Image (cartoon, rainbow, N blue to C red; front, side, top):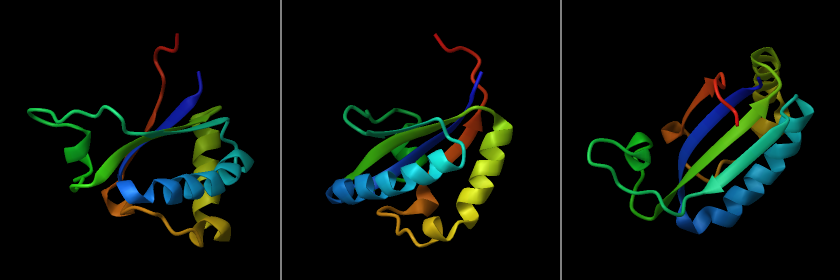
Amino acid sequence: MNYVDGFVAAVPAGNKEDFLTHASAALPLFKEFGAIRVVECWGDDVPDGKVTDFRRAVRANEGEIIVFSWIEWPSKEVRDAGMQRMMSDPRMQDMQMPFDGQRMTFGGFQPILDA
């Protein structure tokens, strides 16, 4: 199976178009470096939990929308090399994120079921 990077971020509601512009600019770089699929999802029905939830995970503030994203790679090895290239590429370094990247949470995942 492929390898997946998952991301959760809090984006100011007014920055939706800026976020989409940013994601659209990063997309060709991810593809160039080996990603086979990039998905960005704008929160629509993200409930507050009693113990934990997406909003708490990223310390979302009032007026921020939860964004859930994932990048699919053919393997962890391709992902590791691609992300290393991505982070050192000047095109990526020059991009301004339309959200607080320090509150973004992310991780790499090995799929165990894909139906």
